[in-house]
Image 1: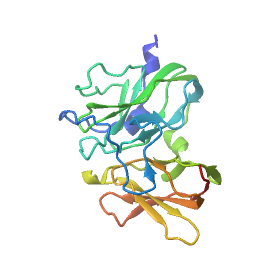
Image 2: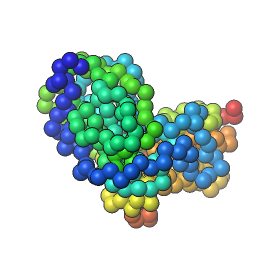
Image 3: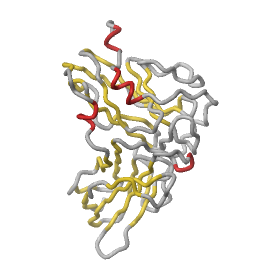
Image 4: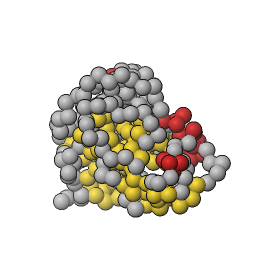
Length: 275
């Protein structure tokens, strides 16, 4: 953007997004090995590539500001900044910035590099009208990037609405299954995407306070529920279950008190048919 003001993220956004900076502690190995739940129905994603991405935006979208932006993550988990656990990291949003040339240096703290160091999965953006290039990038405990990022996404803000608060857009704290949709018919393998609004996500190994990890229960008639615990901070899973009718129930369990359930999502019913 030619106009510097178009890059500014407004105070309400800054208060929502920024965690305290943490000194860089060196890059963790950028292995492509996935963080998979040990369950016979869990399989690799179709791309077999770790990536960070937007779950509610697509390239070329035209939106009004402020707006909620949601983040997804494939083959990795989330952990707050300053914490190390497995291959987990925390999200960053790059505004009109290319990927860094040096992946051994920590990302700066500026209005063009937005850090989600608490383990967030969403943000409110309040950008002035104009055209923007956005991309997601995962980084380690010291904000040194992994080779886990999104394709650049072009977003046009057509109008900026005054007097809209982040709270009015985000709504109450909750978790949800973003896909598949309720009553959907799916063929395996298929992706189940989770989302948390108002909650922070973490790998349990970090023992980060005030964070949770997802747990998925898959129920079918006449059988015991299948339970999958996403203790590495994962926010999605690819599944290859037998053909049947299933009810999916998602929970957010405390990372520090495993028996404590912080939130439950509305159940989603799906029919899995043979390939």
